[in-house]
Image (tube, rainbow, N blue to C red):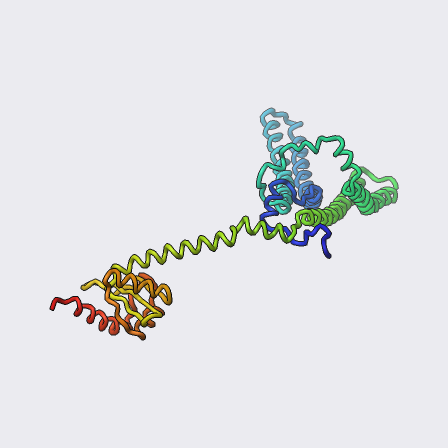
Length: 349
């Protein structure tokens, strides 16, 4: 579907990073809260069982202590009892903290700046606040609250009715029976309510994500401009590459003066090689085709470097060797013949 504003392109990674620094990210605090509540509903039965066991153990010991009072034993008993209670609550606290950290990290990742924490004048402007109060977004939030309340009420009311029905059916129940019924159905209600709230929060987060991504969409021109600023102007980059190639060619041409011979083909290809008697294999110090080959020959004439015509050898060296590379073994014999001629020309008559 076309965007009337022309923002048809998905936001780039750079645009997303900048939005994250400004706090423009999809985030649902309710998603974390409901996830924590659901985790509590799962872990709570085990926690309550452990705490209840600790209290029962503490109560049985207190009976013996009443018969034979001892201050040190009472202090030790109280300390151990509190430690057991804290030990039972620790997993529950760890689950709540862990779910909170994971939930926030999954939504917004690691914080990338404090820009979102900076005070904004428009947030305290009464006129803009009044405008936001009657904005479409405010209306949507009201609809969400009403829908969420209706759904959660629909999930929570049946268990409450079931608890009341069971208690009435018992006739004259004792406290333990009431607590057992209330406890079991309350945990079920808590779990179902938390699950419903979590599903609603996931839907809400998805809608927020879609809204934020829609706000961050870009026009084709904005994408092109960002690429230009990020990668650099293509014309400038081409100019830099041209300068670099020219500098590289100039350094190569300077090496022609140190060459032992230049092997040509006869006008299209030129390869300059350098050989030091007693040293390793000859090395290619310059090579090129067309205009570059012509410059190599000119540099060779200028510096009185012998130019030898050998069409197959010139082509083979140009194809097989890079600058600064020794010639391959299979060309030793052909190059040796050329060097022999060059050395004979240098020998005194």
